[in-house]
Image 1 (cartoon, rainbow, N blue to C red):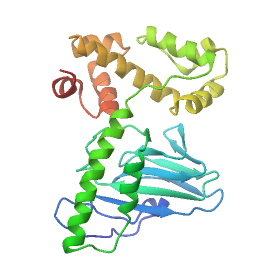
Image 2: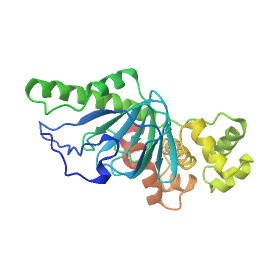
Image 3: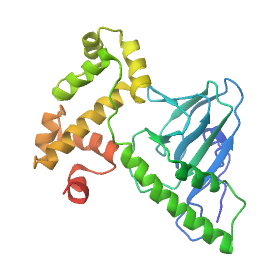
Length: 273
């Protein structure tokens, strides 16, 4: 059954309707909503209980999450985990799409903001899953099949999101290669900017433009990629954490789970072996 939560300022931005997704047979699992924002429109810091996929942007939309800035380009989507505070700024977009997904059914449990390349097929299915009136009977059955198919497609896109895009400019490329060679080093923004012979502000901006990721997010992804290779070769969690620059296995496990959606041991057992 479609249920509307009571009005709350933090649930209003980006057309969120306060849906309470559930696991019963009449609940929605995915719901999309087209938005036509005003020029320079701003949605102040807010959060949703459900996962959000911001996509289908006609123009440019900026999303700010915990100090990191993400630009959402056309044919890409920005995965925002449920409960994540974020601020959205419409820079040039005339239309955009927000899809909300039930956390209980989403195939990927990661809690990291991720930029996704969305296939044409997935975009078509998500458009098909527009916010409806309460569906019943055969209409609901058809919708459920489409929702489950969308989750299957999304699973593949999220797997691709674990890739590590490299910077394109010579200075940042050399920096990225140095970070790959010495992942355990304390690669602060200050140290990285000095090596790249640029300012910290420029470093953050160029990393976002060239890789689609903030510097801190890219650094975390690099360390987890390094850890995956180590775990494949039989390293213990403690050894992988130490070689990737983490001071404790618990901090390493938290970072690993934020990227892959799984704890290191679980990932090794299910995927890497």
